[in-house]
Image (tube, rainbow over all chains, first blue to last red):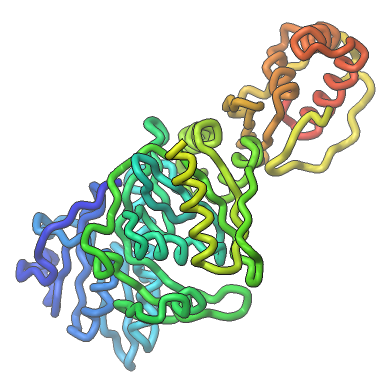
Length: 304
Length: 107
């Protein structure tokens, strides 16, 4: 999935639906073009946390419309085309559901891709995939890669072309959770809000634009060569262990987003990744030494 | 031989003795998706929404389940390909087929 971008963050063009909006933002990610409108300028910072690097000058009134609207009794609401997503008294609470809804619309607009829960970066001519579940350390490792000069693909969603087995860039804000943010004290997010409730509590999340860390942050498509399954365990020294091909399949199947969309292509992609990538499990308790281990592994193999 | 590693495995049920008769010609459920790996294969059953990862021997047995071979013929093939004594191969084939049956991977 390519991320196209051009100018026009606050396009003066009409939104095309006859309504009066305080702002209209046009975005395009891959082949999916859409608009975000708000009836209050106060919603603009929230809008700017949604695909900030995918502004699109070619948008028009026919693109799907996502709305941020003020409602009676102090409520604000986010709508996708034809559907109320969330209503709240706090605009900040709308960001996560709206952004995720758009993300699913973007990703499912091309069902041929294999989508995995994970981060990834490019090393030399190869893509390094970091698939993992909630709290595995994907975002922190990907941010660390970015700070060390690597170009990255995504911190959350890996878009794999299952035929060519290439990893494609996916330009979304990094969503850094509270514990991860402590590892990057100098980092300032575009937008801070409370994440969805998990295990009875919700943590603060920061939407961080990787383009503000480095302009050329986004990696070009590259063949998938490495699968590193991270697992953050406080106090554990970094340890890499080889993962068998059969185990890789089980681990990847636990990370796929697209199984119900296209089982055939998903299974083909997962099997091809298992056959063609070198796979390791990484346990780490410290971000820097954890990433050192990955860097050493990948660089060592490439040199060999 | 451990016939398979597993991504998600249903509970093994009892299989009647007759299904394991050597004359049985096991036939794979055509709805099950199959993808080859270097060291085995992965099966996905849309009916149960379960994936199964098989090692090389179990994958070979699976590919024999086309309804044309009986258990004895599959075991003879496995013995030849995997260089196993025939009794051991027969034991492995029965174990694998029991497991396939239990997971409803066969017709």
